[in-house]
Length: 153
Image (tube, rainbow, N blue to C red; front, side, top):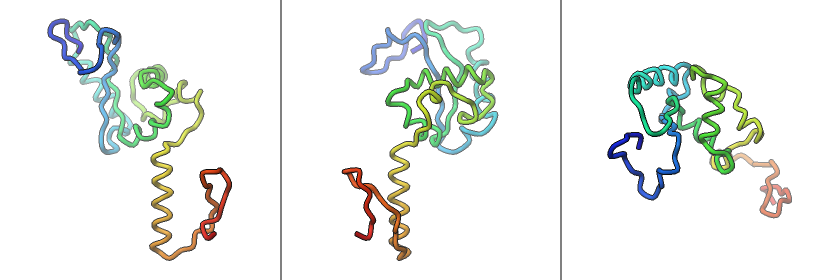
């Protein structure tokens, strides 16, 4: 993808329009969110790039945990990931902090959002646990019409 000769191809994507590559590691555990992890990995990544030239601009290496990405998913329908990562790098050039500890101008403009998958599934889990424990759920819920209703009805 970044080599001058015989660059890797991604089937179905026209790479001629890509001017910048954003290397991103997503970890399955919280290590990707730990303070200093991104800086450490990027330091070694920059050593690998040292002295090499590429036909496309290559940003620093970014590292997120899968949990970070799930939270970020609420913004991705109307925010480019490249813009979010650029804003993150602008505020923390050394990439030393955890992703959510750094103010991000792109996300701030959109306001706080919760990922719909997580919100919906955690609600289902709570109702399932209450049912198994024999607890009555008196909290109002909304039906598709938007009108609140009690579960007991």
